Image 1 (cartoon, one colour):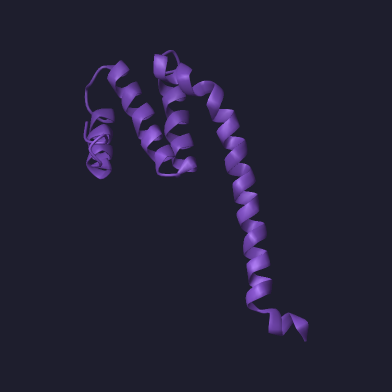
Image 2 (spheres, one colour; image 1 turned 90 degrees about the vertical axis):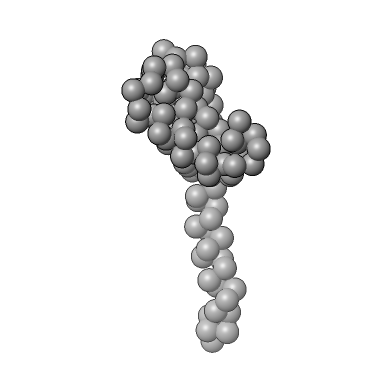
Length: 104
């Protein structure tokens, strides 16, 4: 409900508290799933992947782990591609910013 009303920081705090509480495993699995979903919505794909990988590692038989298992590999490929693209763009950006130096 916190997330639905735009209070994502508060929602993340609550979900993390649930993960470290004595809640049922199904509730903890859902918390990992929701943390990953929030991170994904915020375009923090690596953070989402970390949360969902932790979910599948700790609660592999949960219904939430089943939802993300197939998507994890696809997202990992996307993250790898975007990281490579960022590096290439950083190099290109460096050349553009220092064009006077390189032209000499």
